[in-house]
Image (cartoon, rainbow, N blue to C red; front, top):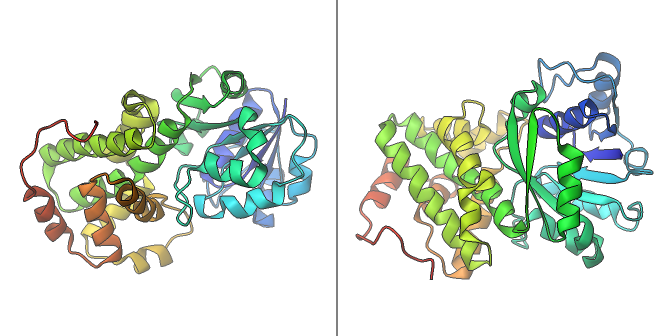
Length: 337
């Protein structure tokens, strides 16, 4: 299967490398010509995935037409805030019957759509039958190093979910299928907000009790919002929910979102953090989108509210913690109908 991967950041490069290892004919689109050149000439992407030798079957290009031409599957792995623009360049030019997969985790700020929603809107609702999402606990560095990983492929059409499963399946990359696209996508997006909060906890040296409580209550927030939007609450107990949450917020030293939270706890402002890195911590934008989505749906997400206050309203992290701890007592399970 000839496959085009759109986006040569860490995750896009890792997935393209995985597909090449699986014997797929892969072309990887890089926005930066120098990234494509280094991949082709040196088998490296030192800017986004340092220290990894890439498979010789992986070819890169900064020409989008070259990457999508004749592709039987297209995997979009751009930052969430540019997905709409990139999808617009694909509209009307997709190869007939090509499988379309989003591996981007986020919620678009203006529309409040998940990534599959953005793609369906731009590419046409007819694409839904061959559209799906890949999500789960999967640091790019570890996938690129061929360490055992399990993820979920969700699609509206069961045949599309099976096709995504077959596309990515490898000896050390196990893929489960799901029909709950909104749940799988929300799990992958919202856990980044909780990862920011976990980084703040770590930066404030609040201990393991605090972290365990944060992750558990964060998962409850994710489930409440998901259920209000039609997701199956049980999805959040799977790989794209609790699995990704544990990796990114609980144990992930490679987590960009957790690292941003730690820097916030140390007194750095968001502007300083954004100016110091080229990589994207999706939780920063997702926090704003999730807060709007929750308010629109009438769902309480107190952790998300306090992360938003720290990021965008100048709140002191310790004051945000006090706000959470002083909330009125409640039943443990509430807000799920």
